[in-house]
Image (cartoon, rainbow, N blue to C red; front, top):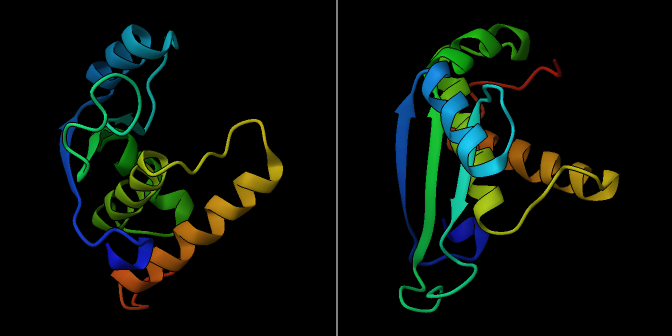
Length: 127
């Protein structure tokens, strides 16, 4: 994660189905619908300084990754990789909702990191 300026970082990843991620999305974010990835930062709020290398938790729906992979021009594993990158960017403060400039910044960083991780063997198609 040195590309992001993180020499030491830790996170957990939980893979679930659409039903489970919908329940978590409703419970924690008040959105009663499935999504592809949820990010829960440990770098914010009370106790955030206890473990400075702990980024947080990612929850990824394998079902959503499978469904979305075709529209992105990726196989399922590449889509999961993209969702991990997307989630990590959220954990370190990137945002795409409500701000067009920030959304472009996040999309560019996501594309850059995906290219690095896949060593250019896959490219993202705009869905």
